[in-house]
Length: 124
Image (tube, rainbow, N blue to C red):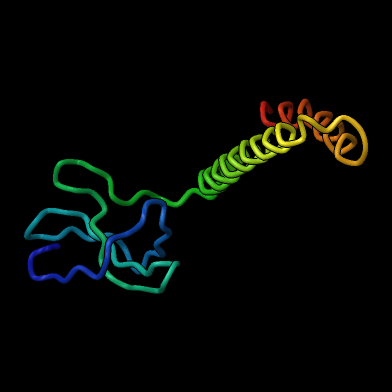
């Protein structure tokens, strides 16, 4: 916390802050600070833009980068779901290993035909 200031809370990575006013330099510390309001919960306060060692704590909002991160996160989640689906499919095929005829045999055959499609989707 800045001397004489109170820490409201830490920002989460990639959290959006709406600027209230222009950045100002803290005369005592020489740090650039910006008053802002957090989109997530409406908390208002000052944020240090860059530390005294040059570490950026706040960067300008870029809608393209934000969209790109969301797409990457969704693709990661999709990949994890595909992996879970593939594991479930393999488990069920293994459970039906002894089924040759009848409804269970038909189910096993249908599940086996799904294997290549799941692998194909997973590799894309």
